Image (cartoon, rainbow, N blue to C red; front, side, top):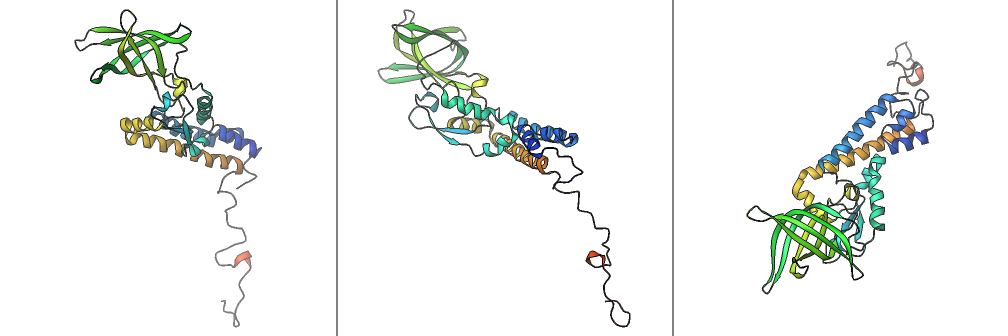
Length: 299
């Protein structure tokens, strides 16, 4: 309730500041102790949720698979659905705003994933696919991939290498080239999908290709829309820890909603609850004495 003993200044401005950053509205009002408590507790809970969830429990949209390919590799904008947990997380204010920015970047991103526009140098995890008469053989691979874009006959291709270790522990270099398929630039996964051909020493294609993932930059995956496969991976690797991380970020947002209300309206209780001076335990309401019966005996 609003009380003159609590200087709320401009309540609307205080509420906006409290929404943008927990405790900012109370600091503006001169309520420094409460500002420190809200800032420390709410942001600590929100950040700890991010840490427990490996930075991925906050996002505004969830991507759904609509075709045979991974949503990362779809050349059209994938179907998305609002993430209901963000309805609570958004009340933390500025710390949750990157999710809206990443959603906008995700929707405005060039959906074409058939060319490379900058050099890649990253760890690679995936498989080597070799086409044979009996079908395809798949061999697990890990190594260091380096690739750069080139122009060949008017089309965008790549040239690069993949340095791996063979079963004998020796380094082996695969030559990469030709066309490439890449996961979307902005996506809620730290791993970016990639597929390209393996060439011979003479630069010819002989039915081998690599499929796997490389690193996606932090600014392109943090609070960006993930897909259901990425959520499955997080639940598989983190188990219940990921659920706890999400709950922490939800609670932080809901706690700041209460702080926003306190900045706008003042304390909910504590002032105005005292007994009236004219009330007493033996008297009636308003302090008026009860009437006496005849004979002088009180009722």
